[in-house]
Structure formats: C-alpha cells, structure tokens
Image (cartoon, rainbow, N blue to C red; front, side, top):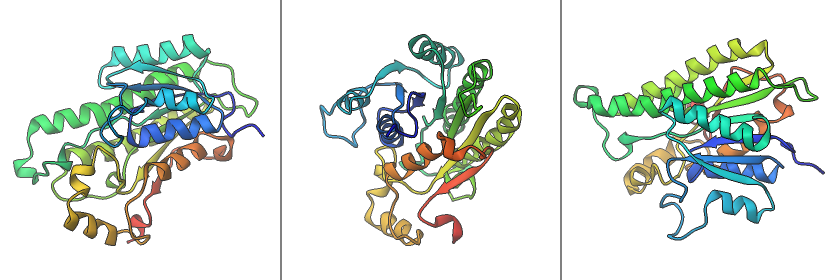
Length: 268
C-alpha cells in the first residue's frame, strides 16, 4: 500500500538532527521525497561521530532526498531553498519549519539579566525563520495545481509547549514560540482560500542534542519527568508521527491548530 505521503515533496528545515531528522525519516517511510535543509549537513552530537547524514539514511530506506544548506533567518536563502525544491521536484507539498535554537538550555537567565543579543538571535531563527519559511512556501503553494484532495499544500510550524505556557529564565525562547503560534493562526486564515493548511506542533520536553546539556543534569531531568503524566521526556519520533498526520489527508479538515505532543504536560 502507498504511504500516507506518497509522491509528496516536503522541505524540512533543521533536518540534520533531532526532531527534523526524525521527521524527514518518517516522511520518507510514508513515501515522500525530502528536501533536507540545515546550516550543516552532518548531524549534531546526538549521533556517534561519523554517522551518516539524513539524506544518506533516507536513501538507505529506498527514498529520494537532497540537501540544501540554508540559514532560515535570511530571506534570500529561504527563498532559494523553496526555488531549488521546485526545480528538483516541480512543486512543494509540505513545508516543515523546524529549525530552531535554545540558548537558554545552557544559560538560563531571569528577564532582568537576559542579554539582548540572546533575544535577537533567538527571534531571528525561531520566529523570523518560521515566518520566512511560511511566506515562501505559501507563495509557491497557492499558485500550484491542487492535488486530488483539493489541497495545495501543508505548512507545519514547530512551536513548543512553551508557546502555550511560560517558564523562568527563558524570555527569548518563550517569546519566540508564542510568536510562532500567532503567526500560524494568522497564516492559516490567509492561506485557507487557497486550500493550504497551516498548523503548529507544540512538543513537550524532548530529548534531543540541542537540549541535552540541560536534560543531562540528573536533578533537572528528574524534575521534568515528574511534570509529564506519562513520566519521561518525549522522543523526536513522537513529534515526527504528529507531523506525518498533519501533512496527510487525515488532517483534511484541520488548519490553524496548535497541537501539543507533550506526554500530558499541558493538562497539568
């Protein structure tokens, strides 16, 4: 049986490691061809030194993929990313705006001591990068032929449960992730008439290389695990499965939502 994303073309930013890598592999297993994008092609330290790239892993699965280097905070690079995907595949069906940073993972600061440089850098990647990805993907999608379902595209923005809540010492990160949700809801209205879906995923605390310096502290990890009714941290694959759903026809009547994937954290 064809996969749920059979013959779709997906761009995934921040795909070299963590949630982006897991999503790229999940999409490939469901039949999509993937444009992998990141500031570097090699995975971060959540994989052993010398581990294959995401493109190579997709090819091992029998899938088709390419890599495009992109700094999502720069408009020209994001526009070029979408253009190259269209040149390669003819269209863009799915855009996953996943790239992000978390400077507070290693250096949390109260708001009165929070550096302006942290705030600017965090919003540049976590919010402006999502805006640019949404902008250029929507521009492409709204003009392309609809699929048999009538849909022209699916945009999935990775926010956080900290886009729904606050936490101390994380002014820039929390502000950026709240912004992603406002952008998602507004873009969903803008894109609805073109049958382009725009949704967000709000991961709970997830064990990835980006945040491992924080989680690796035993007292912090134990505290966070107690805050999740399912008792533990999420895995990147948990988020990837939700991303498959939101990119498929199963989500045909879904747009403008912020979907928590958080082991019950949000119901506390």
